[in-house]
Length: 105
Image (cartoon, rainbow, N blue to C red; front, side, top):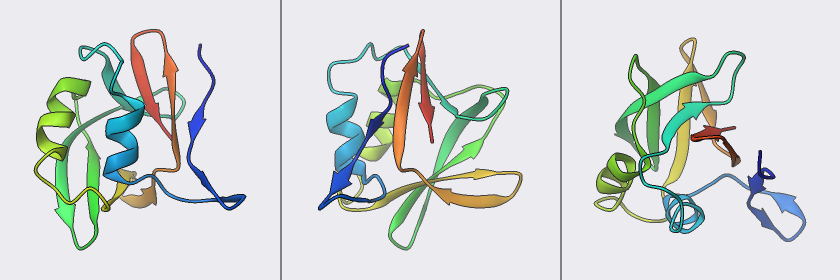
């Protein structure tokens, strides 16, 4: 597995914005699938937009990086990324690449 990629600003951890996700995944295989970093990993799909955030929801079939980029390219790049697990919203602060998976954490 490659190291976890986390966004830092002034030595304080900040949450990922759409622009960060697009930059971090720019050179990755677009067929990689997106999961929420849980045990076991939870497939992430279906992006919803709220005030100031794009939200990945649990799904049976995970989005590919290509599909996520298609949806994210139409949104404001400064919007934060979030995910819902067990009906609990959480901001994405980084991602990890493991085999053919992108793990949001």
